[in-house]
Length: 240
Image 1 (cartoon, rainbow, N blue to C red):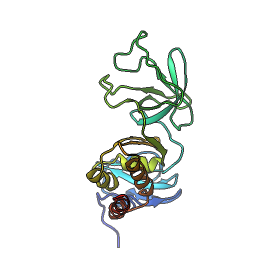
Image 2: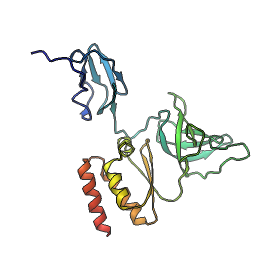
Image 3: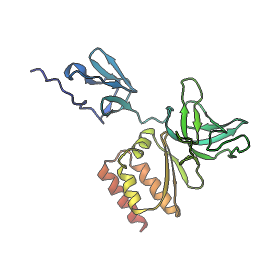
Image 4: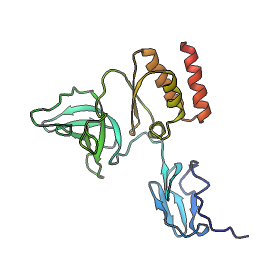
């Protein structure tokens, strides 16, 4: 029996796929335009995976594969946590966990002028935005939002920074708030900055709070929403 054409997205949404898996059969879908993002390719009526990861879908019609990779691939508009590794006359050189070091121009700050250049020590952790990311070139960063304001960007003082996968970083930045951060926020007071490059910074008045938040986040990646909430409850009981 032939299946009826449908407008429903693939049944593999949010499932792990591997190279060669057919994720969409266009012949069974009603006439519609779809957009293919990273990790997918079209061959006739079939859309198949080119890399391992979770198949994602956003309305109205975009599909892509999200890989929980250690190496970060910069994209324009990404917010990342960088580490200053050197400073030059016109740029800070910043490690953002990508294939190449990034440039942060000394004027890429709100109100930045040649007379008003910020001073950053090597090793400074900084929350920045990717503004240029061309293949084969060093990415360029900025400490301003799209309106030229400092917003939340700039150096992150004190606190604790740890590494995560890029997949965990995206989960933490998802909307609505992911369960582990929601549960932590209801019970504890802390600051957090999350970079899409797989770095997370946490700060709080109490070192015990910093450790609890970091542990909860690092253990949450493979857990369901209910399991994430149970994890936070258990960790909180230990420190009460």
